[in-house]
Length: 189
Image (cartoon, rainbow, N blue to C red):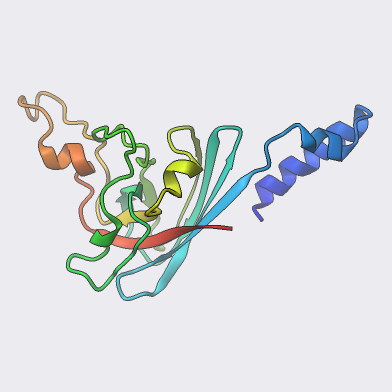
């Protein structure tokens, strides 16, 4: 279980006891968190890290730890299929496109997340909260996967001075994040 989540429960317990409310009473009024996890692997199947997703009160907390990647910014998304076939060419296309239950273009896909910044040692950590995606979206009939891309995501942001005609179809679909270097199927925990 995530240490931040444990700290939050501990604070809730202290507040509940201090106010004369039993812990079970304080927790009974809240939604129990739902937890999912993805073990990231490279195309050869080598483990690269994990991403934990905790949904509570209509928000999704995403906590990731990754290692073994090239330094720099990498696109980081939830993709529409819960399948990671690394042996395909190109790898991990089995995960489909960015998760977008409403059919939005990039950067408004529900699965669009902040870029992942990998340090010179090949390691990265991410921790953020979003209300753009729910467990119902992630655990639909075909599941979902986390993808780390080779390049940074530009969020379909092409200033007019660089491209007067606006973003092209590839930019609107993927944010020009490039190939897929890591994938992990999201499973409930």
